[in-house]
Image 1 (cartoon, rainbow, N blue to C red):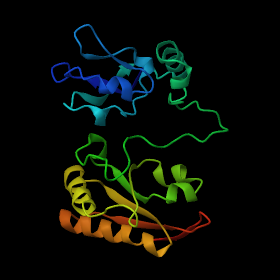
Image 2: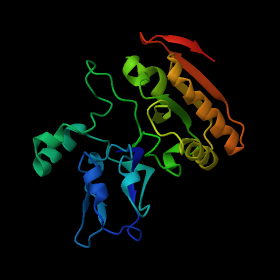
Image 3: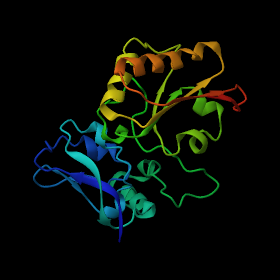
Image 4: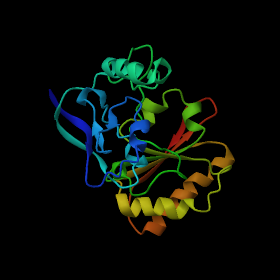
Length: 226
């Protein structure tokens, strides 16, 4: 037993839609006889909170309490038995992932700016990373160098319809009050709009917040940090 992050369900708010049960790749949630979401076993919950955003009533939240440690092997076996071997491939490997594969530092979902909710609890007081789409593919150590310890939103200033982005990001800043913002973008000219977007959002939010810029070259190397 250990004190760790784990899901909690408010039965009074749960409407039994079942969206969380399918969003959880580890099969940690199911509907009980009353049609309410319940945690099957502590060891199946990885504590990442991927299920939070799909709940339409806000019945889910991540808390810290004493419980069994997350067991990816037990979760994988559970998913194989309940959903089949193909579904088991999506089970989060946990901190014991093989060294041949670098662990993901992503701790929330979704990540696309046009999909995220500015009110999502995991943004509250976070260090926020606003990254251009291409940066994660260009820098091999993106997770370790930039994503670790931060919450993420990604966008493409060239291809996306960015018209709602300034206000959405400003709302996130006002609501979540992040401690800092890091903007990661490519050196190509079309990517410069991402920094301008963030600057406008900070101005619209009317708050003072440290903003750092990281430029990544086409070879994946850091070109400039400011």
